[in-house]
Image (cartoon, rainbow, N blue to C red; front, side, top):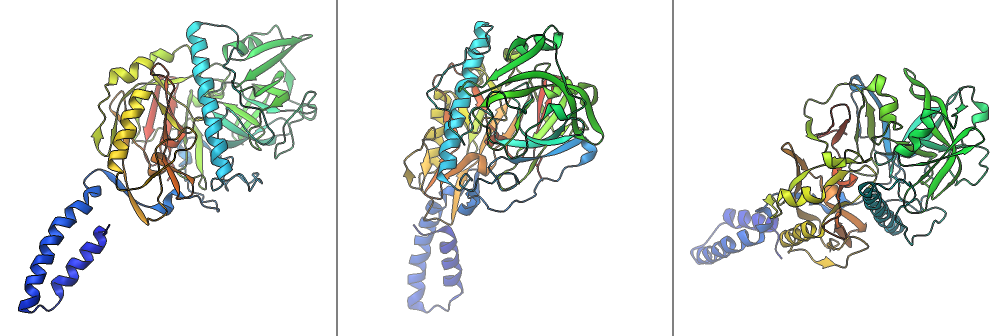
Length: 493
């Protein structure tokens, strides 16, 4: 097909060439043909679209320190992807955004996490007390594969003297834990030396009879006792877990932000792996989460910005002033007694066209926002409309086979530029999240397989999940004190 750019260039050339009376007739014919062809080939511009270079879907090998945070807003930690070039401790060059194995594992792990979330929510709905009646999957725990946890890491310090540890940050979990020496059970390989409580003067085990020990169950874990010492266990629905001593320790986030008696898990037996990170930083909604334990200083306020590319940096911020451009949606009351941050989706648009799915449909099952889920999940009815509308706007590009949970894929290998319809997600309170290009489509196998970065749940009764791919570049504010979630564009730049 002749490109609009070529037709425009041809039009200018013909109009500026000397014309004889004979060629004038030919020019008129050509000009009429041009008028007929030009609108047809440019239909791709008649909808709200990203005019994108196909290379913008591909990963870079070099870290781009993209996030510049105004530290007057509060304390900020650098946020990087655990398999990206900005994670200095990532030495596994075979597992990068460019490798097919990375995407295969990422999609597998993402589905495992979603299955776990749906199972956990069902458990809370049925008011079951056990923390380990999670849905079992057939996914094996293998060395080198991380499952059911988040993808982005930050670095904090524990102990006296302090030692730095890089932890996966996760808004879907509450208990912060790290692997500890002497690992009486088993520990996975991590990049940094493991925390040794015997070398910290501020470490103290929690008593089994204390009120703090009882908070473990509230946070979705299970508690036990060894003599008078409190034990914890947390599982992530896929068979991976951490268990060990429940303790207090000095947590250092910065030189001016030090918290004594921070409750955390000192893992003596851990499996399932979290890349090369040392453990997990819980930012959920229970009293054991970092947000609650630091409430005296940060007022239960934190925000993050997930970078557009894995080769860029974002940030995790605590407290401070809110961005002027932030707009809030209230936390959904449907998820009040769960660890999840519930939101109310009211609609979705593709290419500027609002999908024919009523707000009541979205609110019936409900939705959450999650930092650890990558691909946004919609109920089958909503996803079907989204996918078919997207395909309608993308009809000029060749489709190819889907992969794993992604079924709407295209082959861009013969293109330099493509027009991708913009997608917006609307939330209660008049919030519009304009999804970044890299949150609309993801290159799974180079330019030969670039897929719509949305997927379907199993049933219309399943909760929808707003994943981190669709949150990219936004400052996502969690204001637990006022029960609201905020969004401000341009958070990483």
